[in-house]
Length: 379
Image (cartoon, rainbow, N blue to C red):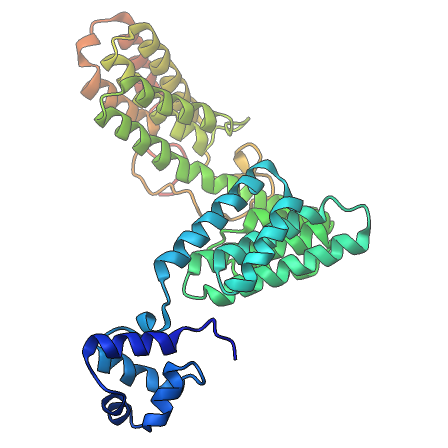
């Protein structure tokens, strides 16, 4: 018999502490006195179904009966994790892999260990010159990711990203593009993996579809980046860090300006308002020269857009394959010059006698049109 399980000694120890006889325990558990005697002398173990009754008799947990210490296991695992982390940081897969595979013998369902084993095998697969060894490590990595998904099935985030990792092993290591796409399409409900799919489409020679997916991603970035940069600037301002607020807003304006093109388009619309926001921060920082530079850029984009406005996605740079994206809107009743004029009057009124202010207002007033006048809306 394997005497590593110490439950017999624990039963004897708890019985003496309680001042109970073997007969009393036997009656409570519904077994014979001889059975209790065999437990205590390590000749046999209690049936697993009796453990709750025995634990209740001694008023202890089943873990205490089995001398199972979760804290000890946590400490052991934390030590293993730290050792693996060192191997991961150094990229030493050959050192880390034996450690994690040995640890999995004791903790076969630990998601972190399963993930580490998968990543070490995936990493090692790239070091092989032998195609068969590369394939062997890649398939083993997939199997560990799949088990990590099963063992951590309640963690939707891990399941999503482990599944993506599996797809990329098929794509990068095994060149099984069809299988990789099949996996990514299954988890792509929110279009989160469109860029990954585009990369695979390119490898498969489907370059037109690749471009469309990439341009769709860029179009979404234009919409999302307005909120990201603007809200980040607000956060910095709330912290009293106006310099970083200004930098965030300037970064936004610079990024969006890259999408302006031969035909005035929605990027000009966004740039006009982004530059005027940057000008507001310059004013708060007493950077007057830079303030005027940003106002000038805002007016340039506003006037340019209002003279010949286009909300077509294909008017923007890099968007020739986008088609009907549906992410931009011409629903506002006014065009850009109206908004920039209003912002000048609301936020820079103290400069209304400055010749630059007067000049910019004149340019905006001359260019502003309703959307019917501009031909965006039909009567």
